Length: 338
Image 1 (cartoon, rainbow, N blue to C red):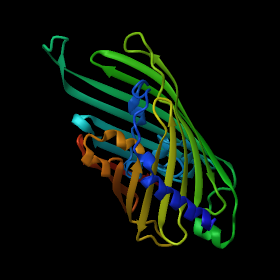
Image 2 (tube, one colour; image 1 turned 90 degrees about the vertical axis):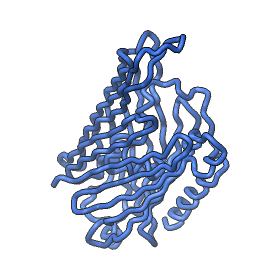
Image 3 (cartoon, rainbow, N blue to C red; image 1 turned 30 degrees about the horizontal axis):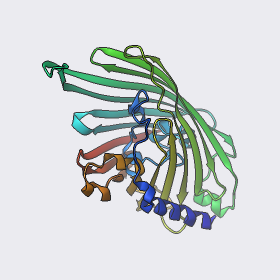
Image 4 (spheres, helix red, strand yellow; image 1 turned 180 degrees about the horizontal axis):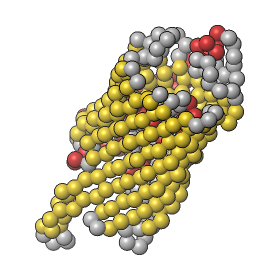
């Protein structure tokens, strides 16, 4: 298992420098409905290159892999916000609560909106302005389907040599609504996910199918397909250091294959308390699509972030370097309710 950790770290490093990083848009890019569903929402997820299908056990599980909910043991809430390009506002609010046994349910609201966009006709005459708003409300559930409960800390289980496979599974149902200048469209989506915990207690493998469903109503007549994606990923906690490495491979139906990798260094962690400070870095090959000049090629796709925990509260921040379109900042505030 120790070799597996080094192979995981080597794979993540190789992906960053791999020539395939120069990803291009697929011929089907922009052909799916509700593209806002593909935006990474929480700051931790953004900072780690969007690669957390095997790692997300916080609010990110409600967007990426609902099986990750099964790891939560307390009531948990979160709120994320970002001002995207050209004053587009994006946000994500979630709440999750454990049930009896190893089962957890969660609720999440995602929104994207903008207003004051200049409106003109075919002859470039000023017609005032318009706006748009996107909303998605999801109900999720995750549960342990194989293996014992997480009643002991991983370090204690390793000392007692308790080694076993564990398997979590989850599902989300999402209602979607878009409004654009007086026109509206709706849809229904489903996410499915599994999460396998290897016996070393430091490695996980995740698989998710997101945004499976249909557009139930169109803006005018033509209905578009959903932005369905299949995502496979790993997560490994190094034995020698408080460092976690993650990597995802994503196959979307409306674009080319892409990948994301990321790492998180926990500072100040002890045997009795979680790390109060985390430093993060990631890379997503889809970020190459945002290049506007040759000078962007060295930083396009990278992301950075940090997390600060105080008692039951956590503040996460993610920074995407400024390209020709401008830098992005995302904030997430979260906490537990005991």
